[in-house]
Amino acid sequence: MANIIVVFPKIEDAKNSRNLLVRYGFSVSAVCTTGAQAISTADGLDDGIVVCGYRFPDMIYSDLHADLPSHFEMLLVASQKYLSECSNQNIVTVSMPIKVHDLIDTQGGAQRTERRRTGADHPGQGAAHGAEQPDRGRSAPVHTEV
Image (tube, rainbow, N blue to C red; front, side):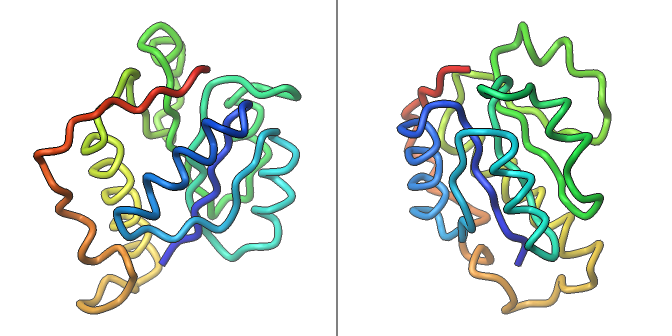
Protein backbone atom coordinates (compact mmCIF):
# COMPACT_ATOMS: atom_id res chain seq x y z
CA MET A 1 0.00 0.00 0.00
CA ALA A 2 1.16 3.50 -0.73
CA ASN A 3 2.40 5.62 2.14
CA ILE A 4 0.24 8.64 2.98
CA ILE A 5 1.75 11.91 4.18
CA VAL A 6 -0.74 14.51 5.44
CA VAL A 7 0.43 18.15 5.24
CA PHE A 8 -1.54 21.14 6.50
CA PRO A 9 -0.18 24.33 8.08
CA LYS A 10 -2.25 23.87 11.25
CA ILE A 11 -1.40 20.72 13.19
CA GLU A 12 -5.04 20.32 14.29
CA ASP A 13 -6.18 20.20 10.65
CA ALA A 14 -3.44 17.73 9.74
CA LYS A 15 -4.30 15.46 12.68
CA ASN A 16 -8.04 15.64 11.92
CA SER A 17 -7.37 14.63 8.32
CA ARG A 18 -5.10 11.79 9.48
CA ASN A 19 -7.73 10.57 11.94
CA LEU A 20 -10.37 10.60 9.22
CA LEU A 21 -8.20 8.57 6.86
CA VAL A 22 -7.25 6.09 9.59
CA ARG A 23 -10.91 5.68 10.57
CA TYR A 24 -11.62 4.52 7.01
CA GLY A 25 -8.77 2.02 6.95
CA PHE A 26 -5.92 4.00 5.40
CA SER A 27 -2.46 3.95 6.92
CA VAL A 28 -0.93 7.40 7.41
CA SER A 29 2.87 7.42 7.56
CA ALA A 30 3.36 11.03 8.71
CA VAL A 31 1.62 14.25 9.67
CA CYS A 32 3.48 17.44 8.76
CA THR A 33 2.94 21.20 9.01
CA THR A 34 5.61 22.34 6.54
CA GLY A 35 6.59 21.40 3.02
CA ALA A 36 10.16 20.72 4.13
CA GLN A 37 8.96 18.13 6.66
CA ALA A 38 6.89 16.42 3.97
CA ILE A 39 9.79 16.33 1.50
CA SER A 40 12.13 14.93 4.13
CA THR A 41 9.60 12.25 5.05
CA ALA A 42 8.92 11.36 1.40
CA ASP A 43 12.64 11.00 0.71
CA GLY A 44 12.73 8.16 3.22
CA LEU A 45 9.79 6.25 1.71
CA ASP A 46 9.45 4.13 -1.41
CA ASP A 47 6.26 5.65 -2.79
CA GLY A 48 3.08 7.32 -1.66
CA ILE A 49 0.53 10.06 -1.71
CA VAL A 50 0.73 13.52 -0.16
CA VAL A 51 -2.64 14.86 1.01
CA CYS A 52 -2.20 18.58 1.50
CA GLY A 53 -3.61 22.07 1.60
CA TYR A 54 -2.69 24.97 -0.65
CA ARG A 55 -0.19 26.90 1.49
CA PHE A 56 2.31 26.04 4.21
CA PRO A 57 4.59 28.29 6.28
CA ASP A 58 7.55 27.62 3.97
CA MET A 59 6.04 27.06 0.49
CA ILE A 60 2.88 26.45 -1.52
CA TYR A 61 1.60 23.18 -2.93
CA SER A 62 3.26 23.64 -6.35
CA ASP A 63 6.69 24.03 -4.74
CA LEU A 64 6.07 20.92 -2.66
CA HIS A 65 4.93 18.97 -5.72
CA ALA A 66 8.04 20.00 -7.65
CA ASP A 67 10.34 18.85 -4.83
CA LEU A 68 8.63 15.52 -4.08
CA PRO A 69 10.23 12.32 -5.33
CA SER A 70 8.75 11.28 -8.68
CA HIS A 71 7.07 8.23 -7.16
CA PHE A 72 4.79 10.38 -4.99
CA GLU A 73 1.35 11.62 -6.01
CA MET A 74 -0.43 14.68 -4.62
CA LEU A 75 -4.01 15.16 -3.48
CA LEU A 76 -4.64 18.90 -3.06
CA VAL A 77 -7.52 19.91 -0.76
CA ALA A 78 -8.41 23.59 -1.19
CA SER A 79 -11.18 26.06 -1.96
CA GLN A 80 -12.43 26.24 -5.54
CA LYS A 81 -10.66 29.60 -5.94
CA TYR A 82 -7.25 28.01 -5.39
CA LEU A 83 -8.09 24.85 -7.32
CA SER A 84 -8.91 26.92 -10.41
CA GLU A 85 -5.29 28.14 -10.32
CA CYS A 86 -3.97 24.56 -10.28
CA SER A 87 -3.17 23.70 -13.88
CA ASN A 88 -0.92 20.69 -13.18
CA GLN A 89 -2.64 17.60 -14.56
CA ASN A 90 -0.59 15.35 -12.24
CA ILE A 91 -2.26 16.74 -9.12
CA VAL A 92 -5.58 15.30 -7.99
CA THR A 93 -7.80 18.00 -6.48
CA VAL A 94 -10.73 18.02 -4.05
CA SER A 95 -12.74 21.18 -3.47
CA MET A 96 -13.57 22.48 0.01
CA PRO A 97 -15.75 22.26 1.91
CA ILE A 98 -15.71 18.56 1.27
CA LYS A 99 -17.76 15.70 2.53
CA VAL A 100 -16.09 12.76 4.18
CA HIS A 101 -16.96 10.36 1.36
CA ASP A 102 -15.49 12.75 -1.25
CA LEU A 103 -12.09 12.67 0.45
CA ILE A 104 -12.19 8.92 1.04
CA ASP A 105 -13.34 8.14 -2.53
CA THR A 106 -10.60 10.31 -4.01
CA GLN A 107 -7.95 8.87 -1.71
CA GLY A 108 -9.06 5.32 -2.50
CA GLY A 109 -8.87 6.07 -6.22
CA ALA A 110 -5.38 7.46 -5.88
CA GLN A 111 -4.26 4.34 -4.01
CA ARG A 112 -5.83 2.04 -6.63
CA THR A 113 -3.90 3.97 -9.30
CA GLU A 114 -0.69 3.57 -7.29
CA ARG A 115 -1.26 -0.18 -6.88
CA ARG A 116 -1.82 -0.57 -10.63
CA ARG A 117 1.38 1.39 -11.34
CA THR A 118 3.42 -0.85 -9.04
CA GLY A 119 1.67 -4.07 -10.05
CA ALA A 120 0.30 -4.69 -6.56
CA ASP A 121 -3.41 -4.54 -7.50
CA HIS A 122 -4.31 -8.02 -6.34
CA PRO A 123 -7.21 -9.03 -4.07
CA GLY A 124 -6.36 -9.05 -0.41
CA GLN A 125 -3.46 -6.59 -0.61
CA GLY A 126 -3.56 -3.30 1.24
CA ALA A 127 -5.43 -2.31 4.38
CA ALA A 128 -7.57 0.09 2.34
CA HIS A 129 -9.17 -2.77 0.37
CA GLY A 130 -12.29 -2.69 2.52
CA ALA A 131 -12.25 1.09 2.88
CA GLU A 132 -12.89 1.82 -0.77
CA GLN A 133 -16.65 1.78 -0.20
CA PRO A 134 -17.18 4.18 2.72
CA ASP A 135 -20.43 4.63 4.59
CA ARG A 136 -22.43 6.95 2.31
CA GLY A 137 -24.59 8.00 5.24
CA ARG A 138 -21.82 10.18 6.65
CA SER A 139 -21.72 13.59 5.10
CA ALA A 140 -20.09 15.71 7.77
CA PRO A 141 -17.85 18.30 6.12
CA VAL A 142 -14.16 18.32 6.83
CA HIS A 143 -13.13 21.79 7.94
CA THR A 144 -9.57 22.50 6.98
CA GLU A 145 -8.35 26.06 6.60
CA VAL A 146 -5.98 26.67 3.75
